[in-house]
Amino acid sequence: MSRMLPRERWAAFTVTPATLLRWHRELVRRKWTYRHRPLQGRPPIDPETRTLIVRMARENPRWGCVRIKGELQGLGIIVSATTIRTILRRAGLGPAPRRDGPTWRQFLAAQAKGIVACDFFSVETVFLKTIYVLVFMHIDTRRILGVGVSTNPDGPWVTQQARNLVMDLPDDADLRFLLRDRDAKYCRSFDAVFSAESIEVVLTPYRTPQANGHVERLIGGVRREVLDHVLVLGRGHLSRVLREYARHHNSHRPHRGLGLRRPEDVGRPMSAAGPARPVWTMRRETLGGLIHEYHARAA
Image (cartoon, rainbow, N blue to C red; front, side):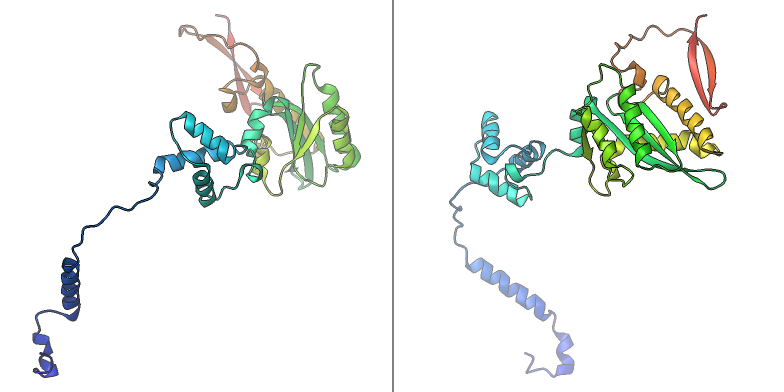
């Protein structure tokens, strides 16, 4: 037809070449109308089973393929160890001995009762002089165990802060780990003080402040509640402010991680809430009225 009509008349065609090709493909499809046979072989793994296998491997890093197979078998799911290994490999998970261990969150939650964490932070005075603060915190109770302030935190000073902490610990304290970062201010004698008390020093990875998140959150709270609203005059002034805040933090401030309890109340039985009734309250001002504490008073 294109040969019979001149090129300027090709616009008279009612269909395009793409339409002709589509019609041809449709005719070919209708020609080959053989019945499709079902594929023979192993049935595919259910997506929920795949998700469960990956979940078990991530939540239990010490479980191997055979251990996961046995756990699935107890749930009535039959999957071979080879299939489990293939699913884990596609999910980026290796075999059990070389798989990643517990996360920092899991480690801290399991060992919280025996962990003390410490960290440095700096404060600028009104005269733009830098003062360094070393704070120790018990992770399980969120209690501030010690605060040291210095303009020159050298090795002897840091070691003395470690000795002060060890001497002030209660007799029933069962501490096993000291969690700290890799700051150069910590010297060998600092670690030796804790090693002598059978307390293992655990170093966080490089550039991972979230690994020491409890102390980082404490430092942030100190800045938001106090230091951002106070002009620090010097080392003595900062020491008095931090000691007063540590008392408030341990004895009165409720903590979300403790179910809104106070650090000093951890380990004590919680009193049952009585009926709602009017209570006379007394307000106590802390840090010159920067923080208010409310105490119940007999009517």
